[in-house]
Image: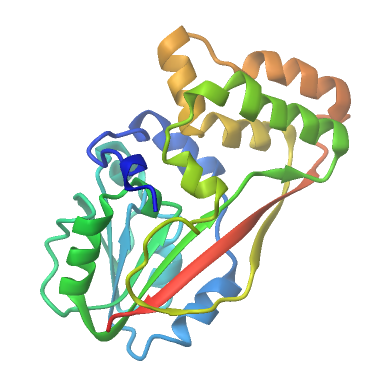
Length: 256
């Protein structure tokens, strides 16, 4: 476990990228939620922590009476759509404002690596009902089913942006295997996120990366502009779609 990498959740890395999250971040497979719900005895209240603009929160709202989505980014919360069963809150992971023993399921979708883990886990144990469940998942490096396009995307990720990724990115690359998870853990099946995207959709996703946002802030230019020209040379018609996927790792556990 490398706790020193779990730096400072109070650092808001994603407010400038909020609109890109809404438009270009992939949604999670229905089979993942079906699997989770099989372990959750009651479906009254779910808490989606580090919810961003609600990619997972809205899917949970189809399955729970009420969902609370929290994020430290005011811009992300502002970009989240209104839903009758969702309450959006600007709040850190270790201070939800939820009542003791009130939550049936806690979810951390592509967010656990940003949290102060010891404080967050204390909060999770406080708000979970007896036997309540916590689930954290992360998707790894994007994979494009086109050799030339994939090579350009990987070079952009590792060379153009390589030095600009936060240290917390290590936990995404290692699929959360180095993160403490002090719950009664349950073994889970593998999952994959898959989409068919045009060139514009892929570029929108790349611009939603925290490292890309950091590049713009540091250098005052968009690094995807040069990449776009390279991709156009190998893509074909920009409206053609290519298969894109991410391996997804799920860790779930029960409150002892």
